[in-house]
Length: 225
Image 1 (cartoon, rainbow, N blue to C red):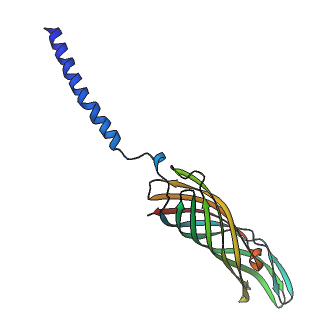
Image 2 (image 1 turned 60 degrees about the vertical axis):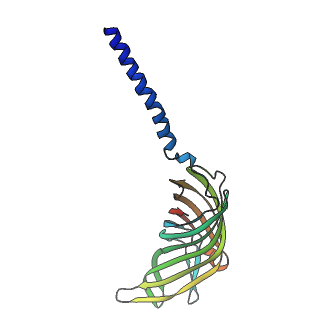
Image 3 (image 1 turned 90 degrees about the vertical axis):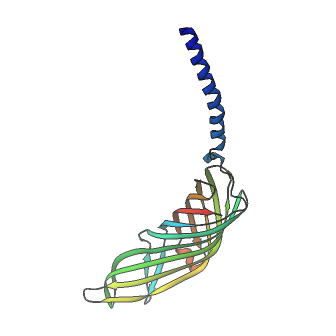
């Protein structure tokens, strides 16, 4: 009798397992794709933006009343980065970019008659570029890339000397010119529509703007559609 009950119980378990296995297979096949299976962004547009750290390499001479003051000791700055682009093929993105570095500041003692005091120099930089981004690994979750671009850059420098009683405005300079940029980064795709981006780019201008090169390290969020 016990043996009959055991055989009956075994039969019930076999029936349950035979029903459960196909259901489990169906559930697995219906589950979303893994991150490593995310397809390339070929044929898609994207927009994005985020904060950046602007590392300065500023080195130029200020001409004040025939006296030359060397300016090469500036603090780094923060900034903002905005971009929009398109993937004509999965290995290549073409991108329009605007970047703004808020304020590089330098302070020094100023002792050029008739003004004596503490001098503050502030430099702001903005760039407009068109970039090409090459992706050797265009599919999956992690996608490194190399970037190069050309465009227009503008920097404005303001000079002020603070004395015990008054602030003296020493004027300002504006630097403009063509700008070239080169760098590398990586996109972290969390889905087909959303990615996080880390990049480091060196920017150098022509003419007077060549005295104000900067490196930007940015973190951006990208939306694809």
